[in-house]
Length: 305
Image 1 (cartoon, rainbow, N blue to C red):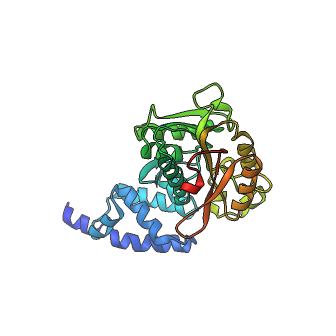
Image 2 (image 1 turned 180 degrees about the horizontal axis):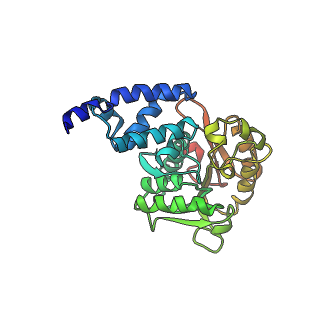
Image 3 (image 1 turned 30 degrees about the vertical axis):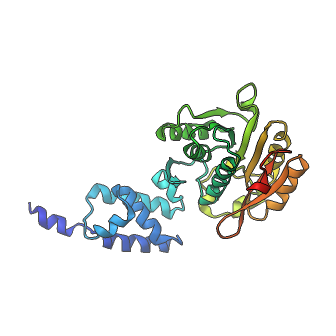
């Protein structure tokens, strides 16, 4: 058998990328080229740039079959992160699947806000509770940034906590990030986390009626338990705010991600609960992505940041 001839007849990366981009575009995938590259790089176990460095590399049958399977799943509108089983967040690699919401860049703004405010207050050993942790992205990222922090990551979903547990272990954060199942504050009762310096959460905030109209990648695949914020999308903010003031330490604050157009309503909910110095947290485009509310009398509150 002429191995060289067989190899030369095998499909090459550049041709495969062109055909797979066309395939995804025909299936109404807006980011067809990017997704084709990400999926192929994942199958080959290389960085995307290597696809062009090795543009004339042929694919062996097993690689080609796995890539075709990935493309078919993406064409059915499965999110890329679920196809690959991975998502980067705050430069950390997280395992994700349909049991958890996919971590998004918007949430990095929330993590950065928490860490910067703790630094401004000179707190390097905070007690932090992450409610509705999902994949554990927020808790793990804070722990990575603040090694002295003690974190409890909670979720009502046992399936989600299994994913979070795998991420805590694979990132080497066992003993720094603790996990517990339960509704909102329930898992903190009787523990060292019953009083906290920071309550952080990316709660469900999509109005129930809006979920069916979301992109298919979200409405069909992401867990509705992590999306559905009730009739007006604000149910969880009300419940979190109600319990926050009595649980925050004298140096504490609440940091909550918000949906588009929700910042004013969430600020009012936090203020009505007794939190002060409400701060909208914007991303680099100027869009409000989170709201922070402080315990009354926190020295070095919003005015010093």
